[in-house]
Image (cartoon, rainbow, N blue to C red; front, side):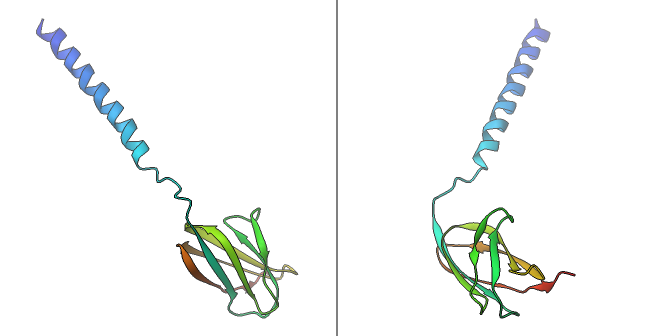
Length: 114
């Protein structure tokens, strides 16, 4: 009788731990708050037009002017990596920065690719 009760209690405790562990894992996920900010991009060491991408080269934001500056609105808050590549493909660089609500200034230094 004692073995059966101990076994049932053990199964119950293990089940509770697993269930709580699964729910605790869900609590770590931070929901998207829908907040956005404005990002001012500046290519610090080049006066040339650059294509700007965010988080991957498939997410094209736009092109800087010939002074290496651009402004992008409605960028979601959180950590983002901004990639810059000149329009000829000779120079590129990247910068990861935490974007918050309001104004954000991202300075990217580009380097010769070849």
